[in-house]
Amino acid sequence: MKHPRLSVLAATSVVALLSGCGAMHGHHHGGHHGGMGKGAATAPAQISLSQPMLSSGYQKVAAPDTAKVYFINLKNGDTVSSPVRVQFGLSGMGVAPAGIEKAGTGHHHLLVDVANIDANAPLPADNHHRHFGAGQTETTLELPPGPHTLQLLLADQNHIPHHPVVLSERITITVK
Ligand SMILES: [Cu+2]
Image (cartoon, rainbow, N blue to C red; front, top):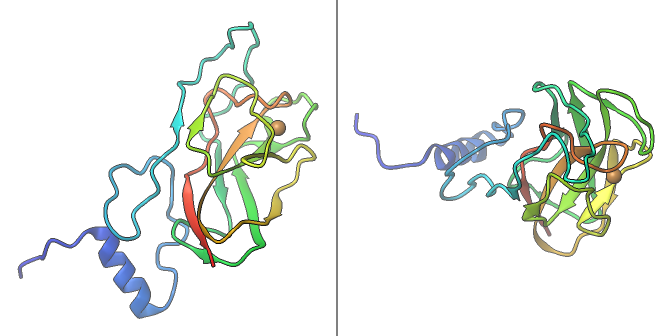
């Protein structure tokens, strides 16, 4: 049998439509490359190479290679209504409030429509870089209609990303 030039993602979308279920859930990991066509993975943000020490001499908090942040209730391509509930998942590390120095921990940051990340500086705090310094593991976001990218980044007690960075997949959601 001849296979038409149909991308895997397009084929999966067809299956999801036919079966009426989220066939792709739970299998997203960071580092997708070269996705094309309908339902393609969101282009990754540009991120500077993580240095173990900042130019100020600040030693970054180490993260185990197994550490992972991820979206629990959203996936790339989802269409949602505002306000959008976003649940943050973390494995291989623990959550601690900002200001608390404890090995193997950090607090969540939600990056909204961010295309460039400096891995070697404290994260800015604005509408695009939201800090959850009380140790929150979910939020509700008011977003205007249209597509938005979301990405989670863990950072230490001083809002500085770990080494290596603990960064989720970057997803695009569309607000109705
Ligand atoms: Cu922070």
